[in-house]
Image (tube, rainbow, N blue to C red):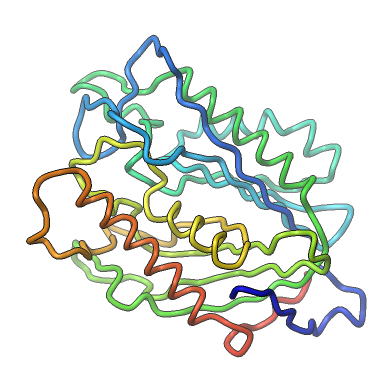
Length: 294
């Protein structure tokens, strides 16, 4: 994956091309918040203690026509209320009308290592959302959406999948889940633009485990960083059908767990590295299928 090799497109002869762009905007953490910043994990009333990596709003613009397109906006957080989603869409309404954006899909990556965006993790019987942080989420999502449109370039889109061997399990009956990681890979015509990968994986982003008090994108962030490092492509993580409780296993030797946060940080890092390696090694030009422009 070190040097990009271009796959001949079946549709370029007819001039049919995708127009796709990507952007990622960091979500700022308030420095002197008026109300506490609670971690959206497993415990109530626990404030974050440190930042491993910042949550981001990531966006992809998808279009096959200059007249119409759509935005996918993925926010690194545990979940988003419909009121927050409405404010993001409202903030993009003028932009959408101007550029012909027919649809704006906003979703959460479901990382439990982020600030509470639903209000469920404050002290018992107390609302846990911080209004300033929610404003920052909205601002970042709007900025990412607009920047993804500006980043668009023409190219081809390819679909591939690989089995996530032993890297997910269902902890609640019935044991039913998608055992594959699915990828849509955009290959731009112009080498000045980055490739873009949209990766769908059915697992909760909680490899930092239940005692975590660090802010992080969790393993999707590690995947994005590893793919960027290895081949320069940008990545949008999209959680699949995570059902009752589909998650990644504890990969590190449990005998190494000395009770310190570092064990779980290392577990998260290794999880992301293994998943990104599976994507990069198992999905290639021989296993991909080109997706025709609609």
